[in-house]
Length: 159
Image (cartoon, rainbow, N blue to C red; front, side, top):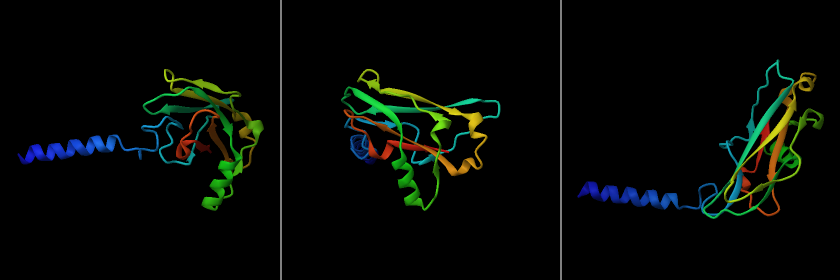
């Protein structure tokens, strides 16, 4: 009997936890968010000497039970860099725009195609000319006029 009671309580906790809206805000509401952030504000990216052009794959997903339709874009976001520097007392600089290329335009997202991958190109030859690469960040955010964006998972910085 004790085993059944413990199993019942464990099962109820699992159901309640699974239905909790506190799971990064992505359940049960439809929200668009970047994948692979895992609480990191800065992701270090390594390009090799043999590469002339590097790629950053930025993946996003539309979560929730009820999918919606809309368009989403990726932007270089100086507000993210300013907020990061203010919060952490750092002095990172925005990677100059001649060293990267972000896909222009928006991508349509539907309940049938919930994931999106943006490919940003980085000029590796140009990066070699910079004095100290550790001082530069490329802050990116997803934006949309018609899709709700998860505020905790909408931006990321690449170093």
